[in-house]
Image (cartoon, rainbow, N blue to C red; front, side, top):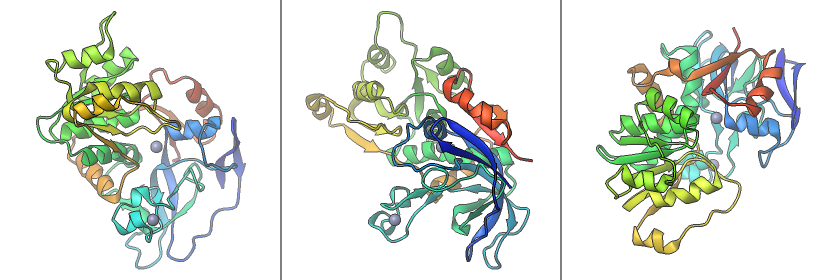
Length: 338
Ligand SMILES: [Zn+2]
Ligand SMILES: [Zn+2]
């Protein structure tokens, strides 16, 4: 079978390798759609910490069941979404029902080989039956679940003023699920064109920053000088994450969805004056996956407008490096295997 292998940073190869043999209890699946994520571009570029090469990337998956052991609950031909977070089941996080931050977490396509391949073996617990969802929809569940998890963690309540900073795919999911939770949601991005596009897709309000003013001025102007009840930063950018503190209202919450491989600084007096709550949000749990799939089924998520670019396993060798460099007009690129 063919697999797209990142042999070292900057090098992708389509390799012919032996098909995997399912271990006891595992389900053999055929990836049908593989969403390409910021993480994949980082792995390709060698910017991802804690990673060994060669690596088969791909964690945003829609798969078709090829062979399932008796009693697994799955049967051949079923389309499933995949929870790519393989947790240990026994550490402090797992014991507290938080497998998304398992101390021994292994992420498919990051810490172990993932879905950019023709066949893959998975534990049945990490498969979620599509039950009528399209393959495109199933491949969108994982990145939307990251936003859904952040919104759940923040406890967004009906009528709260919410700001989402950064309009990449994670910001898109966060905006959609904050709106579903009843928030009055605005979006902010320095890429004005992207911000306007995403605002129109998600129904969030674009925060325009007039010349000569700062994003903080614009955020305050949009909230009668009060600031937002809940601010999500989905940039993973140091400058943006530090600036996000100034958008939060007194008594408000700031949630870092994007992760930064560095330290950030903030003013303790400003933090204390507001009695602000600062939260990290990491990955997603099965509960978030189920919530996302129910919302797609209910028609709340315009999945069709999220996939902007398509490619094949063969053509990814050239396309993925291109998109790693140039993301103009790119919302989500997907590899199709039919
Ligand atoms: Zn991803
Ligand atoms: Zn664990």
